[in-house]
Image 1 (cartoon, rainbow, N blue to C red):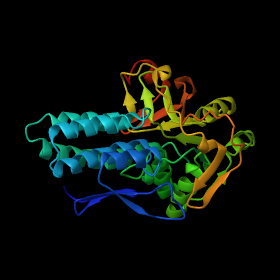
Image 2: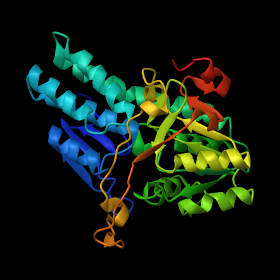
Image 3: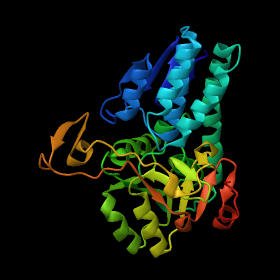
Length: 338
């Protein structure tokens, strides 16, 4: 397999490496991945994260295992096991479906390698297309609010929603970004702030519960958000807290855009009620941990509700920015995603 290098994922010298995003921004450590169990652990612990990147990492691992002469039965099991690792992000299912089809060929090793490479380069192109389209929605002087991390750390390319912001900054220069810290895992504070700083895009980090006061003060012009799954009716799942922003944006009359590749569409999913929502470890809410150490602030016996995602109804969305175009609520209501 040829060398494939992204911001947080690389395949070089017949080895698959992932950047440990759990340790960012203070430590940059690459982890070798040689088994399904390792990749599952990396994904569940958010060392590997971001809907597009999870799918790509899993696909590259399957191709790598094929090159290590694993049997068809072993590879089929690997695909099934990886697909089940996280239930909400449909990109993982998309990539595993492609790899499953490749496995059915007589020359399955070559087909698996070819498919994994195609998925990688496809994601780079999709990111560029989304960024170019979405940047057209940004005006000089805009204050843009975003949630979670949707940049190069989460994809093979420049990102989804954050890719739009990066492209707009290159074109317009005079924009500013409000970055939600994104409880409980702090991807905004740790990762988005890290990427914007590297890209020299002006930003200000805020706590999640400060967004409403900013909107009321007319300090937010537009909101750009990523997605982990978009249903056929336009409802979408994204990092928990997104729904809050959509409701607030609607009340304050602020444009609210979803940015995601077509690989995030799930036309077989009729609406948001059918999207499975992952529940995560209570310890992510009772305290915090990372490269900076570990701290628990809640009582040991505290009951916790910790969904990884929430679902935002299509009625709250101004537009969906996909690699194939910018879609209006009217188009979505007329079934363009079905």
